Image (tube, rainbow, N blue to C red; front, side, top):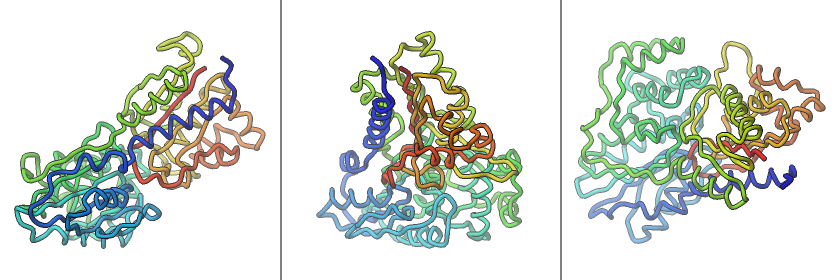
Length: 424
């Protein structure tokens, strides 16, 4: 079969959309709800899917007396009737992040053993629910957040630091709710689905320490504000450790692996053999693009590790290390794709899509982009040197110029990135 550009693009977009749809709370949340409480039910939550998850709880439990508050990203609010929704900033917290966190912590105080705290947690919660630990200010947390985001640290490393600067993360929310039963429904956006990392684990015991946080800042050359350095050095008020939160349970309702399986099913339906390379791939985005280009060339040239037509699928969260120079626009998915395109050098028969399943790649208005065999040629025609653009971390601008950004708008879910490479 001879693949046209239009056909390849349609298949890639169908695969990406299938992955996103598999993580929609409207599809799976109701079947994961816990036993109804004998007493009060206080719903709290944070993340890019928190508002939609709250609306799903209201729909599933019309006869339960619900109250509470969730916080989501600006632009991700959906209407609710009984559970209040606030909006705050991501990826760097703002005043609403702090206000929402204070109100959520207050909402779980004073409950009894017959009461239920239903926590709705999804990716992005670390920034959206940000309550500085005693002695710190929101400005301190904003400075550390911004430095971590530019450092190339992984999400688990970033959250190990964040938990030790917070009055609500790292299991502190669950500890504050005792003796009430705490049931957490989580949508995973982190490699390995570690619940202690997702949104910095507000209801999950924390295996990391102050020493870990200090070591990570040292590793990435981050000079913290004086108040942060003092707190980390003092190492008092440690987060709850494993075994200490017996009243709290967690259920994972959507994961990157589930989304990748749906993507694989969509590829098979299009007559393409899928191979899932992993749901937890990490590393520098552009280097991951180079690596994937090599695998795609092996498929096309040698039929290894599988024969064409094939689709290489992967998930996880790569990183972009900015360094000290100026940076353009773009997120980890467009940087991955530009790295892939540069490595392929215009090879025929290879197309790709990559995007964040929440619909926002970094801080931009696109989920990601598409690479085609003629991407570099069209970029040159637009006066752009792909290698120079990659070096300036300006991948968004290149894909915008050639019309290949993928814009979905907020999807109201988040199971991290989906990358699909079609080899024909």
